[in-house]
Length: 177
Image (cartoon, rainbow, N blue to C red; front, side, top):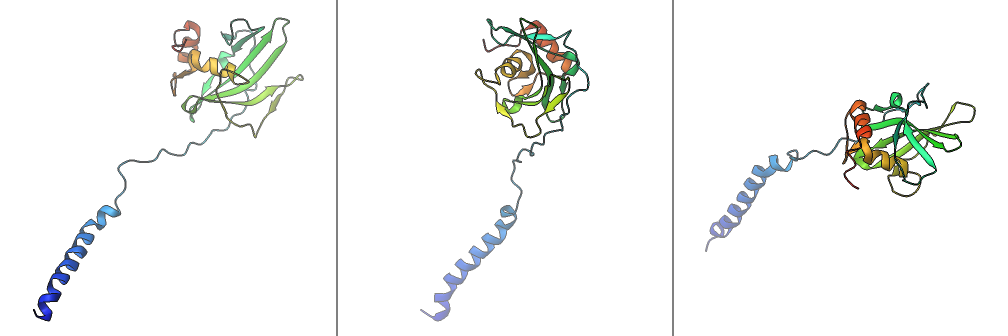
């Protein structure tokens, strides 16, 4: 066996490996076929300058609650960020009001309170308020019930404000009961 006959198989193996690597290089640098979801950015949320507590769209939070709940239809908006924002009013039997400016994000099943109406009539904003998971217990229960009764259709927003209000009026969207 000569020197050349011993080197030839190693040379061919190396040459084939190099050719295969060269042929696969475009595939190694190719873009993946799937694309990551764009990063969600929350739009600014300024409480409305005016709202009404007279013509509220009611929704049920608990059957035996001492409070009645409703949202101001004129304050209901669907933001470009997918957040449904509204003024919610909780009224006691004595007429006392608790007024909140809130948002529901159907995609993540979360709610946020942006501001509370003060006794003096102005908004107390919460600039560092965090999103909270919707729950049947605790402070997000009213938002959870609102989401289920007409704001959300699964992880999507039910539609524009008119569709949401229509769903709340008819009560046919609460498929989870």
